[in-house]
Image (cartoon, rainbow, N blue to C red):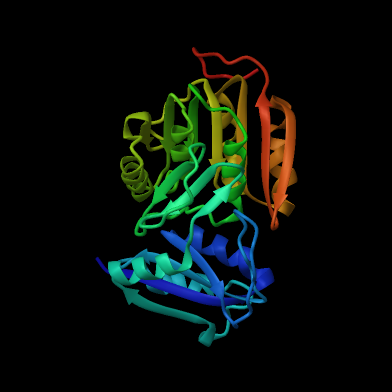
Length: 304
């Protein structure tokens, strides 16, 4: 199956805007690489290395609206020059080879690893490995927002819990929860391809029996123990009532996909219903987490 790869070159400070633009346009995968042979040596585990000039590549379905994507990307700072924006058609094997060249096993926290297919990590019985393959594996842990959520999961108990991964993408957060011992994981996304990728990845990691893949219309809000939502600031604000209703009192809410200057708006939408609210920053992106307060009505779905 052929794919469409569109790439732009931007200055380091425009990288977040470029990634966000690709995601909003429906990119199945977004990767970053050096655009000017500036080496970054030994980045920290789970961190995204950035260079003074960054080449941002997005993978789309072959039938995607090429003109609309290119026109939208021209609005990204630093991408307005025609020679900075390129596209090409690639086959499965070409993309797989490029993906494998760009990624390596990554550790988040003490023992949670993402391991690309065909790669190995040093044996340790305490390690938890999430196996991801190229193709529909968008959401691979390289973006700071995903890294922030994986770091939280690594450091918190999920054994026998019910976990919701809202806006699941490749299902990477749900997979991590299932592999850590969650009793039930509900992955929700409005993109059928995201749900397909999540099912595929669940099968690859042997946790299909623990993971349910649902559209927002199919999802019935219930008192989960943990709700993770790694999406965008605007949707997080709009979804505040639904995400809060999905969480039992005393349960943990983890929000990411938030730029630093958007954190106040998102926090304001949730803070009246959360205690022990904390914020963590990584490379200009924010994770907000807190503990649900108030009562939950199973009859009305209301929060108090």
